[in-house]
Amino acid sequence: MPHDHHDHDHDHLSPSGHPYRVDNDAPLSYWQVMEIAIRELMIEKGEVTAAQITAQIDAMDARSPANGAQVVARAWDEPKFHAALMTDAAKATREMGFDIGPMNLVAVENTTAIHNVVVCTLCSCYPRNLLGLPPDWYKTRAYRSRTVKEPRAVLAEFGLTLPAQTTVRVHDSTADMRYIVLPARPAGTEGWSQDRLAALVTRDSMIGTGLPKAPE
Image (cartoon, rainbow, N blue to C red; front, side):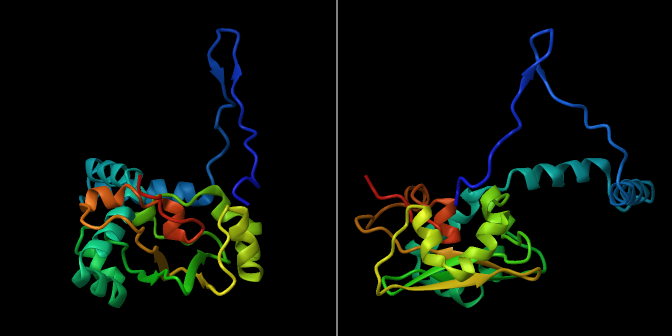
């Protein structure tokens, strides 16, 4: 499943020896024209500055699974925050500086009895402020449909084989609902700092298609 897509975007060298790519000079779409018009109008009216737009784009580009890893590590380390996260994940993460906007965020916790996995059957709804851009496989039709029908088979393709007695729960993200999996804390990490714990948290473990790294 993680390797169901193929990268055909190979670089070719130009006569000068530099990588060659086809120019992206196709006509702008309707929505691209509208975005440019609205952005320029808002700048002209003083509602926002070009610098503010650039700063927001930079902030969006900087989002990565490291954000979610901080949330998970804190939940592992602080019982009070763990309770707050499970009660209202949007509020708890917002107080850490990770605002997912108007969407609701739900944290689902993995245990020895229950394993949670997240999918978006419609498109690619995903908690980007916590996990960055969704991986290519998350957006494929195969993942979106098969995870609902045969989650154990999909997880096995990621290298994750669960005990028969473990219940697998599939959560379907929507336009106004996002999920983050709180993976089980690895054994042998008692007394670790939150930074050290965060280093064990992987993107896939927060989607449910993987587990945290084992402590060395």
